[in-house]
Image (tube, rainbow, N blue to C red; front, top):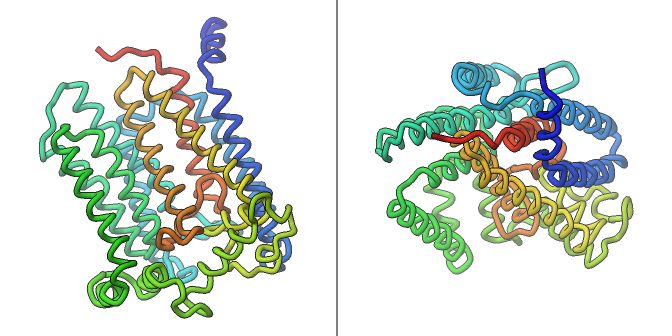
Length: 387
């Protein structure tokens, strides 16, 4: 039973700013999803489904906030991890949707295990790392191996579906948490190597397009459509009526928004359906076209505030598990936001990654709100000390 003094403390410690920001982002989501789908008879039920998922997500958020996050540590997280692994295997028996075995049909809704498994990857790795810190064990390559194996199993299953975008999100979780765990010298070397490799990829892609195309065609172990996305990134003018069509139309939509946007339900690219599947991966182009630079910047600012408030909670948390969990969630969100907005602006390859809390997708939305529920729960109970 919660005492009156504890309720007062919960009210005092609850991050209302973060909740307001979440509501603002949800408002952007509802407006943009409705705008991108209401003129298309084939997508007539998308907005109503989005409303249902929003309601379920906020209900789930409230439930998770009320539960002490420490109860999830131990056996429960491993049970959840195992169930998600089994579901990730079961999807290969389900019919392929748009060429990928990523969904399990539940009546009119589709369940995507690759979304929910991210919750248990973060929990499992955070718990393992917390136990190492609590027992004051120094970094070892055995710990690195355990963290990598926890990540590698779901990564392979998701990659084979194939869902490259979701697989890369799993890698971002692994990389974020591992960087927090490395010794300073190893951390510096790792960050330097990643920076050099990433910079080298972008530089080579634009300075040596012919050689880069050859490398993509003959060296990368990817599906043909995944290679096409990288080809279009290297050369946006490549086959503009087919492989580069979606990216090109999204770029036009972003540019046509200018400073103040064309207005809700007035964007020509969005209302005439020029951007395929705009309600999912390219939802940012609809926001940029109809709300302009000002509106899209406001959305990005909301994401910035959300991440900042999460970092504040982690900084004040006295529990290693809570700290690692929050930073794992932050790493996942930051990668998704950067990659999704980047591919809408044609500065990163198109990888099929959704924009958190904004893109249409029930499994993704519910997963993100469950993670945020645990962040709120950590914030409410962060005063516990580590001895």
